[in-house]
Structure formats: C-alpha cells, structure tokens
Amino acid sequence: MQARKILIITNRVPYPLKDGGNLAMDAMIQGYYEAGWQVHLLAMNTSKHHIAHTALARLFTHLHAFTWVDVDNRLKLKEIVKNYFFSKEPEHAKRFYSEVFKAKLKEVLISFKPDVVQVESVYLSTYMPVIKMHSNAVNVLRLHNVEYQIWKGLEKKTKNQVKRIYFDNLTKRVRDYERAAWKMYDLLLAITEKDASLVARLEATTNIVVAPFSIDIQKVVVNTERERWVGYHLGAMDWIANQNSMRWFLKHAWSHIQKAIPKFEFYFAGRNMPDEFKKMNFKGVYCYDEVPSAEEFIADKKILIVPLLTGGGIRVKILEAMAAGKIVIATATGIKGIDATPGTHYLRVHKPDDFVKAIKWCLDNKESAEKMGQAARAMVFEKYERKKVMKTVLHEVDLLLDRKR
Image (cartoon, rainbow, N blue to C red):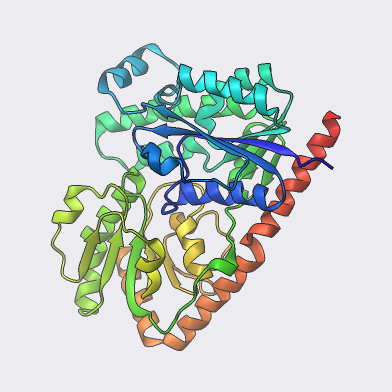
C-alpha cells in the first residue's frame, strides 16, 4: 500500500525547538513521519522568526520535502491603524498573507497531491480557497489556542484605556474570523479539552477532536543527581502574556519569597528578552536571553515556576518539566489545558504569598515533593505520550479519508 501523503503548513519554521509553538508543531510533524506518512512541510520563514537559508537547508532532511518562503510579517503602525479603521479582518491574518507564499502553496498542491492538508495556524485560513481549488485533500486545522480568548484576557487585565479599546476591538475581529475559519475544515484538532468544548459550543457542526501536545517521553532526560532546589522559568519573552506575567511575579511575589526564603534563587530565560528584565536588579534573580539548549538550562534546576495570568492553549514547558520529574508551581491559567490534579501532580498558586508557601513546602518536604514529580511524570506518560496521541489523530483522519473514497 502506498504511503499516505500530508502537506503541513506552518506560519513560521518550527525551529529551534525552544518554545511551545515550535515544539508542538514539530511533535505533530514527527508523529506523522514516524507513522510512515510522506510529509511535506511548507513553512513561512518570517521576518519575526527568520532563519538563515544556510541553516534551513540542514533542517527536516528526513522528510519527503521541506519548502520555505520568506515572508515579511513585521508590525507596522501605519498598517495597524489602517486595518483598525478600514477592515473587519484581524491585522494578524493580514500580516501572514503573501502572494509569493500563495503561489508556492499552489505549486506544491499540484505537484505533491497530498491526501491531507494540515494547517498549523488559524491565521493561515486565508489560503483555504487556494487549497480547496487545487486539492481534494482532507483539510485539518490545528488549534494551538482559541485565539480570541487570549486577546479577551489581555483586554481584561490592561489598565491602559487605549490598549483596552484596541484589545476589545481585536477580540471581536479574531472571534468572528476564527468562527468563520473553523467551518472551512473537515477536522479540527484542539490542543485541550476546554478549547474543544468552547469551539463546539460556538460552532455546533464542527468536527473536532482533542489532540494535546505530545512528548516522546523516552527522550526526556531525568537526572535528579544534578538538580538544585532552585526555581526557573523558560518561555518566549516576545509574547505579551509571558512579559506581563513575569513582570507581575518579580514586582509582587519575589519580595515575599526573598523575605521568607533569602537563599532561594530564580533563573529565567527566553527568546527576545526585553531590556527591562535585563536591567531589573532583584537579589537572587538571574535573567538570560535565549539559551543555546533548553535541556541544559533546566537540567540542574528542580522547580518550574509558571506565574501566567492570561493566555490559552497548553503549556508545553510544563509537560516537559513533569516528564523530567520536576516540581511545578503554577497558576490556574498556567496549568490550563493540562489534565493534572493540584496537590498530586503540581502546586497551584493564586496570589504572591502562595508562591512562598509552595516553595517552602518543596524545600521542607523534599521526599514528598519528589513523589509529586514522579506522579506527574507518570500522568504525562499516560495522557501525553506521542504515539498514543497520534493514534487518536490518525484514526480520525483515516475515517475522513475513507469517506472521501
């Protein structure tokens, strides 16, 4: 039997594998490849996450094909203002539209003739007319988040009136765009059960399946001998939700932690670290830019701290930490999307003093904390192991392919 073919379309090159979005896309790409599919990856090499062509030529060489197109998606104030007053489409979707990319997509569809086309960002749904015109493939959309929920959360948190008006307007635009986009696909792959339920309520006819971020748990390194009982955080710092959360944690929670546990240390790093964090001078806090190896950065640190206040989707770094047997301290928003039980798999926090209590418990009860880390690792293996997740995805896709015959 000839191998089935899938074209996966991404709004950035899923590399380097240091942030949740790239890791989530790569997990799906590798999942199809490991299942024996011919995988053609078509990616935008955006100005925001640009990778040199010499480096691109060495990536994804094991796939059937890897094609990229340079796309300028820089934020331009003039275009944002113009879009706000003269368009109903969210500016985010407009920034990812490129005639050059459209032409390359058409070319690949005609030459590759995929059985399945999987789109890894709702903002790429503007290309669906081209996909449907030049292909009879099963069309799948991966929902990394319900996007409008993120902007709704930011609108509620901001105190700046101008930003609040803009976020409110953007929330409505993104919501309408998403709801229209969902109906274009044969299948939606939601990354969390909560997202799937929300989408189903908004668009009752949508065919949706939960396919969480998955981990090849056999590749996760567990080395408790090297670990120090210190805190860490690792995430993309060009994401506004991460910026706001880290700003709040350092300004409101860290003073409580320092007073109660003077020797406790906290390390955080991430892509495009804003200068304001580098200039902050908090005793016991160590700030880094993007680190060469996420695995090396977390290897000697025991406690992952996730003070996220807004956002959606699933925290990939939490699953990776749990798979490595780390202790996770997280807000309800930070843990959202992960089927974990507070007190069993992680420690839940709400306000600044909660961080103190959680950290002190870890340091005073190391044996119990280690057991919590192991319980979390077992939970990740049971619910988020790559082959198990892909088995669900492939079953649903096979059903749709059979119907098209």
